[in-house]
Image: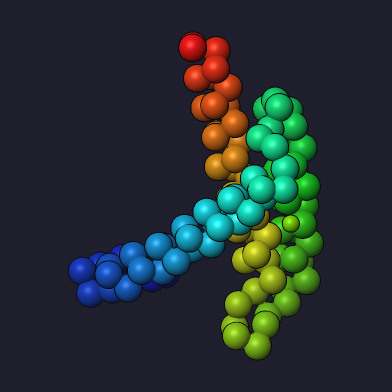
Length: 98
Ligand SMILES: [Mg+2]
């Protein structure tokens, strides 16, 4: 187990920033193709599909030449869809209160 300590905290934070950028890029690109979720149920369906794809990639355990797993891309997509769900609910609740 790798602990986040004073020694490696900056390096870990840099990796977190890199991952967050990938998630945001994925979300922005999905939003250019598809509208926000119409309902929590729609978000559930999309997230479940990403979850199933992530599980398939985990089972396949395919490692790329750069040392990364295929499953990482599906995890990024699932994270992006989780944020899209929260975003969709946030926008809907703002519409309700306006
Ligand atoms: Mg996917």
